[in-house]
Length: 79
Image 1 (spheres, one colour):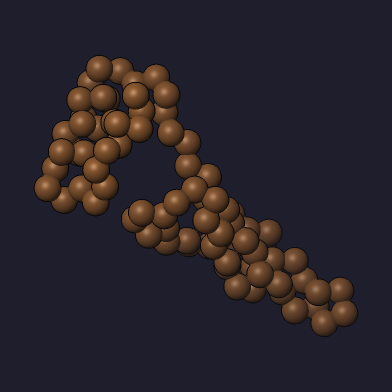
Image 2 (cartoon, rainbow, N blue to C red):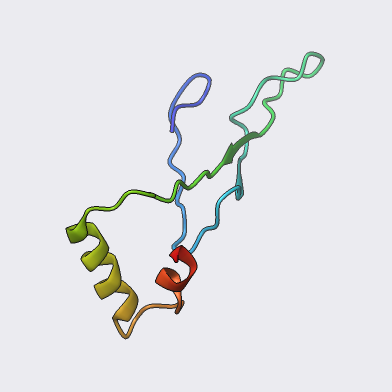
């Protein structure tokens, strides 16, 4: 991710929900009096696709049915 004067690497863990805030220490604006850098905050915004092709839908259904899937009922919520 680009910051004010460089780039920073942000690791987004699996299962991160939308509107989660991540703090990147020391990459924000400098304080007027002390000139120390503040923190930069990045908000995760996830977009759920609405118009899936038949192939995309089959792929998501296979993923949802896999034994490693953490949540059940993804397609139940789409109906």
